[in-house]
Amino acid sequence: MKKFLILLVSLCFGGFASAQLSPSSQISLLTCAPGEAVYAKFGHSAIRIYDPEMHIDVVFHYGIFDYNTEWFIPKFVKGETDYEVGVMPTNYFLAEYKQRGSSVYEQVLALNEAQRNQLYTDLWINYEPENRKYRYNFVFDNCATRPYHMILNTLDAPVLCSYSTDVTYRDIIGQYVGYHNWTRFGIDLVIGAEADRKTGNEGAISFPLYLKDQMAASWIQVTTDTIVPLVAQTNTLVNAAPKAVENTPFLLSPLVILSLLLCLGGFLTYYDWRRKRYSAWFDVLLFGSVGLLGIIVFYLMCFSLHPLVHANWNLLWVNPFLVIFAIFAPMKWCAKATKHMAYYVLILLLASLATTAFAPQLFHVANLPIILLLILRTIFYIRKPIITHG
Image (cartoon, rainbow, N blue to C red; front, side, top):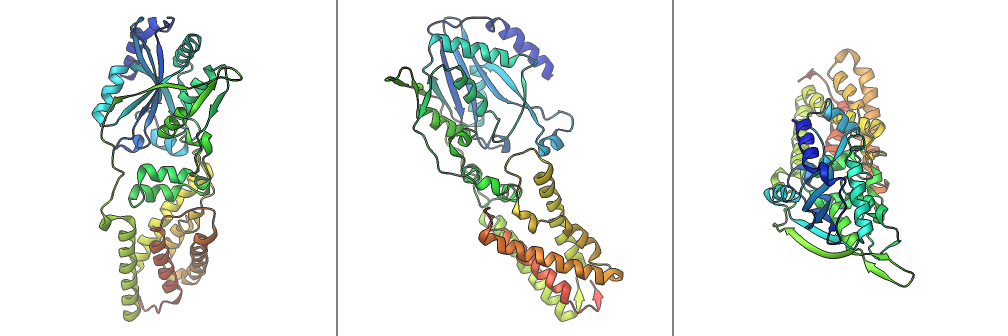
């Protein structure tokens, strides 16, 4: 089906590829507001070619990917996902975002006729089958950075920019996904200290709405004494109500749920102490689950090509070693060796608690109750008055 669509597009627009744009043509940067789907939460960017004389009105964008690609999920996790350049009629593109309920903003660029024709030619060269695919990178090479660099590479004059931003990657992510929800908790778990450095202007263009603001604050230096705005005109092509940031009900938020788990674990620990029992099943589930998360964090930190997931201090408490501890904790025949493991686990957990004060990484507040629960159960395991296992 995908090959058929590519062939259909090629047949429909193939004649446009060799065409020259007329003096009345326009080239615009389109910015699409965030949508509800996870992959759409940060918005989208595209380039529109509009020429009423040549009857051309198409959009080039760099956001096509195929879920049906072999081993898509493992490749995506590792950062080996290939995206493609797509081209489609503008009315189809706008209809899709209107259906999603996302606004689309147009910034008509102040390019001269030669620059417009050069950019138009470059886009079609980019769309050639041998050039169409590119290795997607969430921060450094995505649907926003590609249009930006295509536009700047067309200009034969310096671009001045009065735009500046003083935010980190984690700040921007929070603006789009919120904070007190499970999506943000998961993101904060897998991204590391690199996410807490300032983006600067070059980093901010990875996010379409930031790119839009930066383009609006840019000028082309035509001569030594003359500058003109890069954006000649701004239009709203689709006007929709802004999407509310994901809001998990308070009672279902990570902080509340994990605090309740801490209370449950504290009650169970007290009950075990009074009854002189050890509920091994609870520690198997608790340490095993956290350890499995640790395997994911460790894999991303050491092997993934994604940016921002390296140097992750969460690995101190979300540690793959906890899986081994969970396996051996219920076994009486290796109680002495397992107790040595428990001391090692306790050191890791106490270190993770201390790092919240000095590590160059911001942590989600919901980490605290689960770390405290792990510490509580580890201390209880070391000092447990075992008579029977529960």
